[in-house]
Image (cartoon, rainbow, N blue to C red; front, top):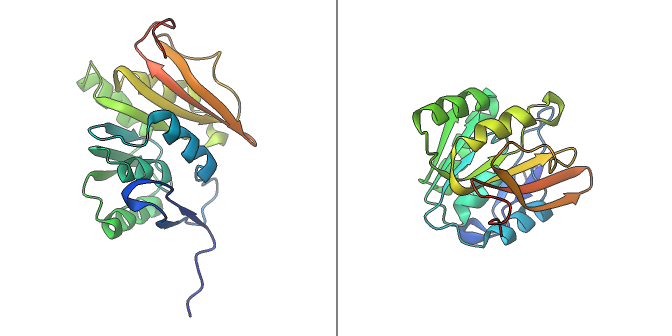
Length: 196
């Protein structure tokens, strides 16, 4: 009898609900906890039908695959670590998630190129869960802002609240905390009075 993976998370909603995702044992890899994912998708609504989603620091894939499970039209995953890219490709294939594309790239460089070629943005939701120890939050937020359509959302996980350090044109829609993780759903391109 084979041993279960040392690390595992489960998708919590949608068509892939309860599917276990093995988490490779790599330094700094920190999948978004189930409780936080559940809160995020309660905020967004249970269906993302028609949405274009970017998971910029895909890691284990838990966030992007949760979006795919909830009928996002297309999910683009960006990951730089070769072992994680291989793992993501395997998981996507196993799920038959044809709406998910995995790219091996540096997330910041990829977003910078994308924003240049799509001045009005193209994504309804950008998921940002960068490695906490690398302090990429400001740069990632600035670049994500350029990838999102007006009125679209950016989700950020960070080791502290980022509510008072947002780029211009980005407002807090919802925020929460789970242990040491602060999570934020931000809306882009609306004045504070318009954000619901």
